Every structure is written in C-alpha cells, then in structure tokens.
Image (cartoon, rainbow, N blue to C red; front, side):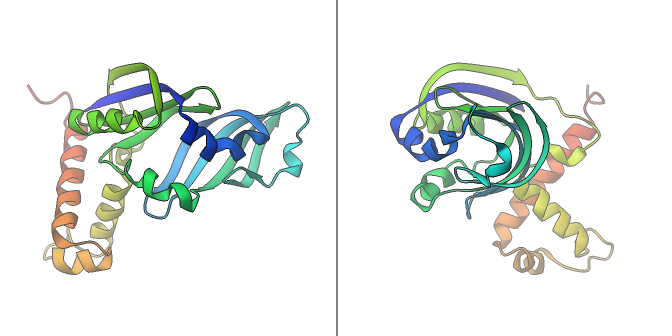
Length: 218
C-alpha cells in the first residue's frame, strides 16, 4: 500500500460549490476525519480554521456547508472545531465517485486557491483517484510515499466500510465457533449484498494481517 499526497488548484465548478465555506474563513485543515458517509454526503471532521479578521467565531454557527458542533480551542483567529459537513444536493452525485477503496488521511488542507488531499491504498485505486481528481482542478504537485500507520489504532488501516462490516461481524458472532450468524444473515444486518460483504471482510482481514505481520515476512 502507498500514500498519495496531491495538491491542486480547484476549477470553477469546485470554487462555486465551496464559495460559502470561504465567506468567513481564509482556509481550514482537517486534523482528524471521524466519519465519512459517501452515499448521504455527510462527514464529521476535527478541523483547524483561520477566520477572517472581522469575524468572531462565537457568532458563526456554520462554515458554509459545515455545521460547527463545538469550538474546542481558539488562539487569535485560529480555531479548532468539531464540524459536520453536509454535501449540497447539487454535488452529491459528483462526490460519490470518490467512494473508492481508499483510506482518506492527512494532510488535507483547503483554501480558495490551493487544496491538498491525501489517501492510502493499493496503486490501482490510487491511480483511479488521480484521474478523478483531474475533474476537481489542475494538479500542481503529487507525491507518493510508503504507507505508515500508528500501531495504537490498528483499525486505522481499514476503510470506513471495511471497519463497519468487520465490527458488525464481530458483534453478531460471525467469528464465534460455532458461528452465531452466517454471511447471508450478516449481509442483511448491514444492508449490503452477500458478495459485497464477503469482499469487504476479506480485504479487511488481509489488511489487518499485513499490518500485524509487517517485518515478520521474509
């Protein structure tokens, strides 16, 4: 697995979609991505934003399409906030195409002029992402790195869907002996098809084993 860090200049379509975000702030950086729901167009993020000089964060309930759930820390015009992002209906279909088999990670930095995206995954999925990013804007810089994870959170190697399915499998006894639930019954619990469920479980298991056994393989 590799990590992609991609920097681009957003095109006019993206600038129009994001215009409400930058009415009160200069830029923001995603510090931690807590949840991504591509189908519903919902994200929960911990961000650091820089408000414009005449703006008081106490008088702002939202940053464009991002609802401010809580302001955790403020220093001057820099604020760390918990936000809930709601994708506008007009761009939901466009955003869904980025629902790839990738882990979206940091750095992730946004301003009107320049935006940085980062993700981790297999080369095939990363190349798909690069092609789709060309629809977002002009790519000005692109770096590839070996993926590295922090051992304190082993599930960080999984995509949100892989994590969701694996946790459900454990919860409902799929890994018990004997099994309390089979793959078909589990697929109904998580509301996806059986082949898709099995695919997510196998990929999750493989990623976990690759991470755990890193350094032990000759």
